[in-house]
Image 1 (cartoon, helix red, strand yellow):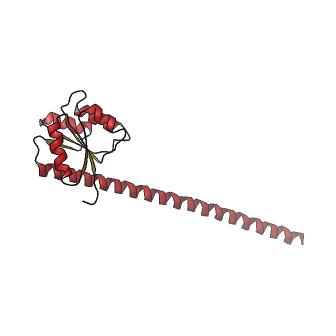
Image 2: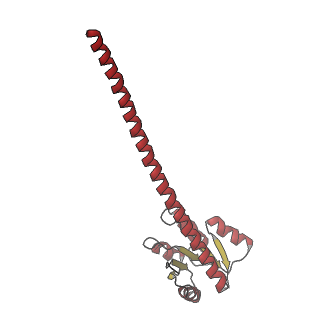
Image 3: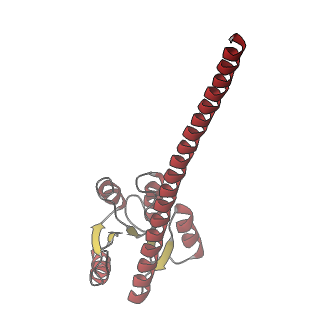
Length: 177
């Protein structure tokens, strides 16, 4: 892996954190952890991961609310969130996607599935950032071209005015002569 992605794993069960951390670090990812939604939100004020793995069932604010708050903050809204939870019913999955998650993995998870989904969402995020960067660059180029066109237009108008003034002066001089 050329780029070491940063992943925040949020789960209130230390054993789950350990399994996920070991799985991801063995693949070269940098993993930070938080044991509650509140701690994760505090951590996100100073640390911006490339991806968040989030459990639903936690004391205090649950994963759905944590996800909503992350997505409401303009500084963190862009971070993809994958739920990893034992709640596998259709209502919970729908609630997770409606809260802003990009994916939903049921526990117990299979290691290859987790790694594939993490890799895919990191790739999608990277492509999205590249596209946004290209759009920004193109927009800047177009704005510069527009400014240049406006400048050229003003120069042409000024030249036309000077030409008309020159003809007027020549005509007046001719009449005077």
